[in-house]
Length: 212
Image 1 (tube, rainbow, N blue to C red):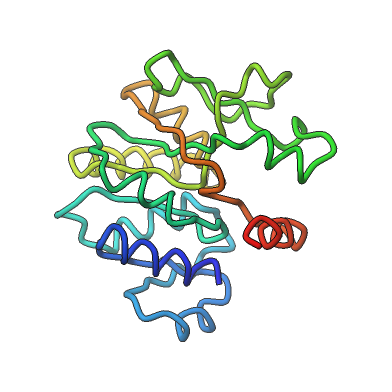
Image 2: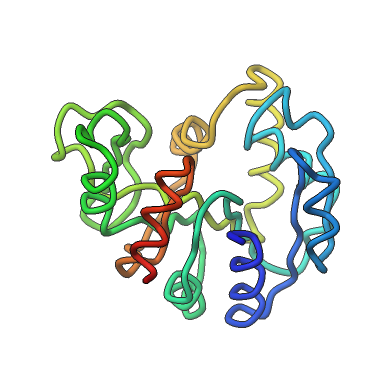
C-alpha cells in the first residue's frame, strides 16, 4: 500500500522515529502497521490540519526535526534520499519538479487543478495556493510533505492552534501562506518521479503505469 511504502522507505533511508496519525478506517489500518499510531476521532470534522495538530499534541517531539507526509501520496526512494543530506534551519518544502508532466497526463486542463507556487531566486517560498492563470505562476508543486525543524516546532504548533481555532477547515497551503508573514520557508526540487498524489482510481492507475 501507499502507507507501507512510506513506512518502509522512511525507516530504511532516514532511520527515523515514525508515528502514524489515523482517522478514516483506523480500525482496519491499525491492524496492518507495526509502528506507533494515534487515532484522531474527529477526522471527519476537519482536515489535514486538524489531524496534524492532534498528532503534535500527543507525540513528544523533542529530539529531531519533523517530516510530515500525506498518507495518500506515493513517495519513492529518491524522495527520501533527497532529504537525507539536507539540514533545515527553516520550514522546508520538497517540491515536485515534474509537475507539468504529471498534471498534463492526468487532466485535459492542468490549470484547473494546479495551484500557484512562486519562489524567489534563492528558492524561498513567496506564495502558494492560489488558482493560477498561467504556468508562469507555477515554479513547482507541493508534494504533500514538509519539514518543520526542531527549533521551530513550538512556534509552529502555536500557529496551527491559533489558525485551527479560527477555522477548523483551514488547509495546509493557507497555513504556509500565514507562516510567510513571520518566517522564511525554504525548498528544494525533487528528482522526477519522486512523488505522486493519489486522489482517485485514475490517479492510482497512472501511478502503476509510471512504476511499470
